[in-house]
Length: 141
Image 1 (cartoon, rainbow, N blue to C red):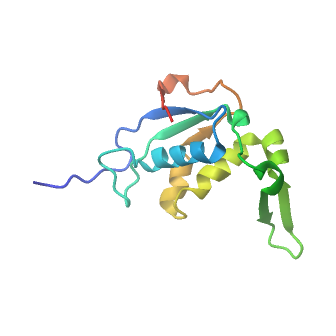
Image 2: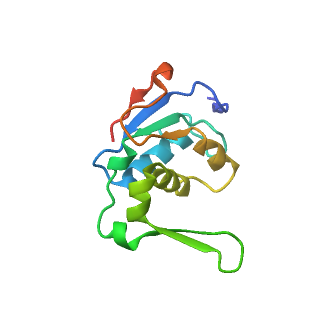
Image 3: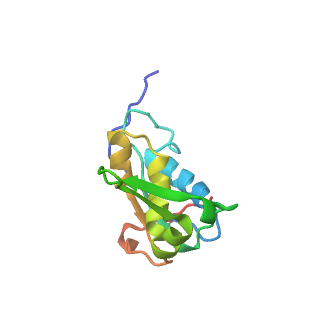
C-alpha cells in the first residue's frame, strides 16, 4: 500500500460561502479550512492543496455579543505614537470585506502557505460576484 502525496495546485475547485445572518468567525473558520484543503482526503499540512473561496454578503455577517462596541482592529505604523485603531462597528459599516479578510487571515498559518492560501479568497459586500465563469459550487455551513 502506497501513500499518495498531493501536488500543489492540482484540480482546485471554487466554492461560494454565503455569510448572510451567520457569525463572522464561523464563516471565516469554514473559509480557512477550505483554503487549506482540510476537507479533502488528500490533505497534507506541508502541501498547498486548498481550493478557491468566494464569500458573498459580507456586509450581512453578524458579530455576536457586544463585539461591535468592544472589539477593535489595531495596527501600528512603526513610528512613535503610530498606533491606529478602528472600532468594529465602524469597520463593518464602511469596509466589511476587510473585516472578513482579517478574520480569515487570522485563522490561516502565518507562513508562506497561509499567505498563498489567502490569495485564493475573494470577499464581496453584496450577493453578486465576478467569478461566474469559474462555475463555483455552493458550500453549506
